[in-house]
Image (cartoon, rainbow, N blue to C red; front, side, top):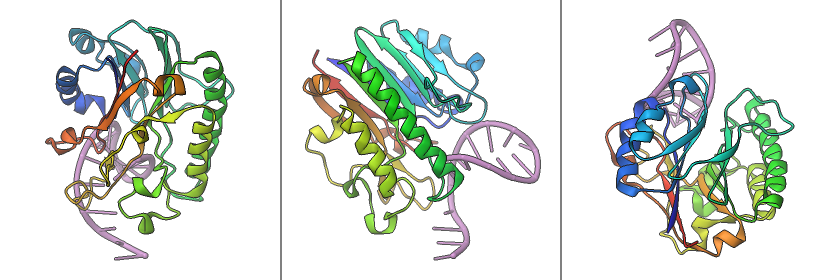
Length: 256
DNA sequence: ATGGTAGTTCAACTA
């Protein structure tokens, strides 16, 4: 099995011990991280190598930052959209063993109608264009990460409360389905899943304990790969650990 | 309608 995972770690500096413990237990072949929140010179490459992983990364001070750790060496790394000069480090592309990997930290959007929301939609339109061109060259593509979009009401603990809000608004959902229409499958929904399955819970108001969450972290694959997907699940366990990330990891298994 | 928490950085921003 080829196992792929994504996790918004919310500071790799703080979460590194948890990440290493989780990798040790789950042994994914590819591991995509978001919100590393550190410049490249601080990336803990030695710790990943000691754990048996190579890594590629695109980070910055304080905010954002993405990285991919992989068992096999990665090549053809890209960290920019071709036609969008964005100072925020939110994407990294690499190829490993004939599979194209795209790791994404989609902007949060803050509030519908805000400047950050416009930036999010703009960013997503560039993602769509980039995805189409990458997709055309790679029949085996996995796009994963923190999309900051709950695609449907079943991905929301309280759809009425969240209706029209950022992460759930119709324009964001339309952008998400446009990404799927470019030739990708939401691996999580290939399988029957427990109701109220979420990947993110706000730190506030005991959201995790009450399971008031959203499913905003996704693993999307081209149909060729999705047809070989044997499982996709959210691992809630690390969200219950002491000093957790606000996100849980998502894992998919492929029989190649 | 507000507040609740966490991370980075040090008063305020982002989520």
